[in-house]
Amino acid sequence: MQARVQSRFADPAVEARFQRTARTLRLPFVRVYGVLFMLVALAYTIANPLFVHPYDTARLAILFGCTLLVAGAYLGSTFWSRYVEQPALDFAALLGIAFLIGHINLILFDELIDMQEEMHAVGVINRLAVSAFAAVALAGRPRLFLLWVALDFTVFLATVLPVQTHGAGMWYALLSYTSGAIIMVAINFAIDRSSRGAFALAEALEAERKKNEDLVYNMLPSAAVERIRDGRMVADAYADASVIFIDMAGFTALTKRVSPGHLVEVLNAFFNHADRCTAKHGIEKVKTIGDAYLAIAGGNVASGNSADAAIAFARDVLAGVDELQRVAGTDVGLRVGIHSGPVVGGVIGATRMAYDYWGETVNMAARLEGTAPLNGIAISESTWLRAKDRAAFGPPHNEMLKGVGETCVYRAGPAPARATLPDISWVA
Image (cartoon, rainbow, N blue to C red; front, side, top):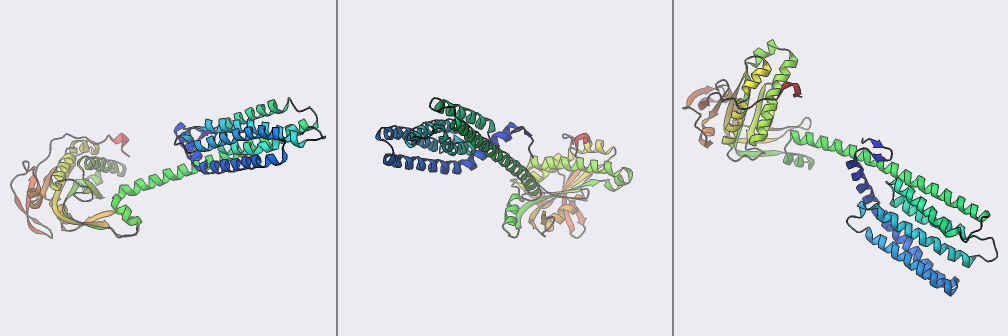
């Protein structure tokens, strides 16, 4: 979860996101509160002529009119697209409403008091409606709310002190105001704490969801993920794809000479380099099989002429052999086999799912790899016919491939070094 400094999140970006989210979620309640307050003020305006002296009725009508005007303008401002970024609107509008309510209370109590103890200040209990409004509207900004309470208290004293004697009524009024203000501060604080806690939890859950989603999209094509979510079967046919099979020569001997940790470093360097090459050439990584790397051009990732993309990718991978040998500390090499033709792709099973490809084209690419020269490429006739860049491939050779029979194969020798593998110090 996000760390907090006092009443704010440590990260300013998170704090800003929280403020926008919290104020947006509170917006409907602020509007409902505003409408209810205006209805109450309107009810007072209608009732006043029935009980209040005409002179005071006129004064109250002006004050209530100003109150409705301020409340209406404030309510209207909540529909402004930038309202959630402007807490000063709540601060100013509610402070103005509190000031008007204070003066309205004085007039109403003047009308109600006959021969009893002066009770002008007791009208403060009506101010709690505005204080509660401010506690909700300014939730998430406790300092701003405390400032609002302080200014409201100043307005209260400035309103009642000139007309209220320092007797029991004044002390009870102060006690009433103070207790109500403390409760409202507690409410504001509670809303702030709970909303921040909920926001931090939501942020953590969203980050975890994003991490899991990235992991899923790293393993499966986005189109396949959508179909799996909808409960549909994932099965695709590609009429013209080029399958690339890359195998590390001398790997078996290497396993007998180096430690398991060093072996993993070598494989990691090879696979990371190949992964970068897939991104560069628009090739789709299918999977790794032991020390072999299987990729495809023209599958889920569009690549134009699949044969040319596959050959360019293979040459880029082979260009990193010198660096791979440096990492291994011994002579290792790569062989590449490429075959073009139809393939079937899809997701099978319900656990440890992966998008895989099947068909004779995949098998042929694996068989061709075995006929490639060390640090070279062997391609089938179908790939050669599709490719525009054939200059590096020599004349065809007939090879007897296991499970396939005699096959026409084109070979290209080692590529000049022009790419580097990552330094082992930072390989994950």
